[in-house]
Length: 221
Image 1 (cartoon, rainbow, N blue to C red):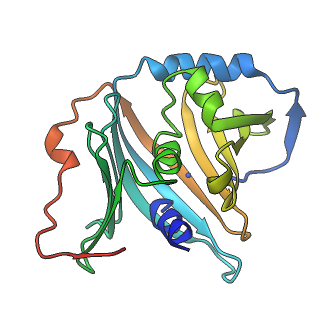
Image 2: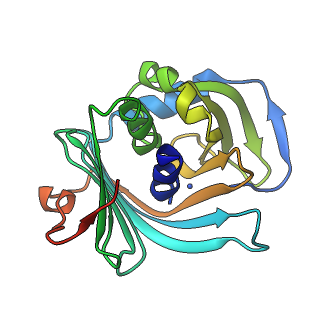
């Protein structure tokens, strides 16, 4: 139960029109990852659409994400942020912070069963090598999108995480060079789609972004 709650808090990246299927093309995926692996930092804004079975329309929110190749990562939803997810370069762990509720959930990097799952989600859109990608994902299909671009459908190799996540889809631009969106399809019938509206590469991302004061916050287990 705790794993499922944590995943829902963390996933907090598009099913489009009809697709023309193509044979799985790991060459396209390798080229995208080779380019991604050379990027030292990313600052992006995204629109998130959360589709729940009980609701006729998606829940829409906006957020920002910062990533550095040294492993530091920050995602926040809302303005002002309603949720902040932090990981420092040291990889000591992940914090999920709710400023409004003044709560923080801390997941230690060495906590049994969670380290690989958390890192797989945090780093999903920024693979450093094809070998790293293959350790986390099983390539199912590479399809063209009617409007232009590519959908790379994968399954998670981590058996514990796969209990909650049915598949992850990386949507690339027409050249297959940049990530346009990331879809997370959950086994309960819901899904989350994150569309990157602004994405800047190799920008200065200061250490201060990966620290957030949580004095007086209640820790959630």
